Image 1 (cartoon, rainbow, N blue to C red):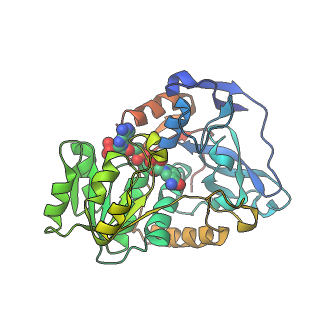
Image 2 (image 1 turned 180 degrees about the vertical axis):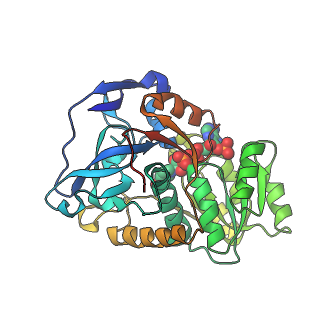
Length: 348
Ligand SMILES: NC(=O)c1ccc[n+]([C@@H]2O[C@H](COP(=O)([O-])OP(=O)(O)OC[C@H]3O[C@@H](n4cnc5c(N)ncnc54)[C@H](OP(=O)(O)O)[C@@H]3O)[C@@H](O)[C@H]2O)c1
């Protein structure tokens, strides 16, 4: 089968090579998916450069975190998935930019009837992650004010929609006039171009000097530091990712003074569903149990079917164009998801 392999570290065009490789074999609780579509995730840009420590297997390996397609093989504990059209996260968050992909059974979900393969591909990670962050971790409440960074991006555009759906008032930030306008169209009350000036003043202006209850932050670094100044008393800062520089993941960002003086909380979220019995202890890794994933997916499908939320497909590209598409993400020019069409695809 064909697969995009990281063969050396560098820009996506330098790092990636399209190769013929053996078909992967699912483990006992895994499925094998014939890929209709994969997706560009920002983490894959960092993975190409070899600076994403969370997913950094030895070279060469197949890139890709997210797959949509039909289950054509399954381990002994996952046979009931055979033949089903699924969307989900690939095993070890690698291997998805390929014609066949292995995924843990706990990380795949039936594609909702309303979605074709392209829109399903744009749905899974953004909405699961945003829902986990806003509801399971930060317990967002109707009437609260939520600041969402990179609001026109894949995950950010889902967070705006889900925060609005929860009855929150959303202040969005994004880089550039088109993205700011797009965030407004998604339902943000206020949208700020944080590349053209200090967003802290704009946030206080938009909240009559009060600040926000919650910040959904997939950017990190300086943006995180500034955001902590935007929180009101009792506010929560949700660490989602580090698009402004993955190095910040390993740098202590918050002092005791920040917590005490701010009367605030800093929390994080990871999109991972795993049987607690299989999670190694003592590593500080605490995925959600699989039943949370099923419950979150049911809630998301209900919102989708009600027309309250929709996946944002910024563009679709051919399988052969993956390196250029990832380079666009690195240049910060994309909105929503870039979906990579791998197989013939199937319509709902
Ligand atoms: N916690 C988890 O389990 C998990 C899982 C998946 C993804 N994530 C994180 O979620 C975040 C969003 O991922 P995504 O795939 O949806 O990406 P994305 O938001 O579509 O793209 C990244 C965006 O980050 C913003 N950005 C700010 N500073 C940047 C910089 N220096 N270089 C490039 N972009 C910059 C850009 O938007 P503006 O131009 O508008 O600033 C850019 O469009 C990432 O941090 C990712 O690591 C976390």
